[in-house]
Length: 109
Image 1: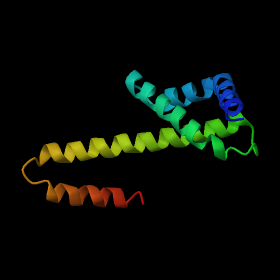
Image 2 (image 1 turned 135 degrees about the horizontal axis):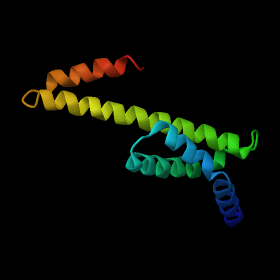
Image 3 (image 1 turned 90 degrees about the horizontal axis):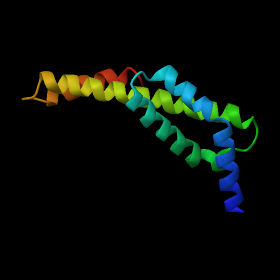
């Protein structure tokens, strides 16, 4: 039974792979970022496939998973870039920059 589920998953993902590529093109400029995001999307799809109950079309569900993954990945890239910029400016004392980063992140919570 699990093998059929695995095969069904692969068939549906392959049939709708353009959705993931489209989301990657919309959210990421760099080819390396697109490739990393696509890999993360495939992982998230596989991880959450057991929760796909068929209440929506597979393509709709796949789009929502890919979109959420892209938004999360974009946010993580922005946070890491911000942390690196703050760290680069204040290499000697990172305590104050950490407080600044927490304040910035608090705006998103």
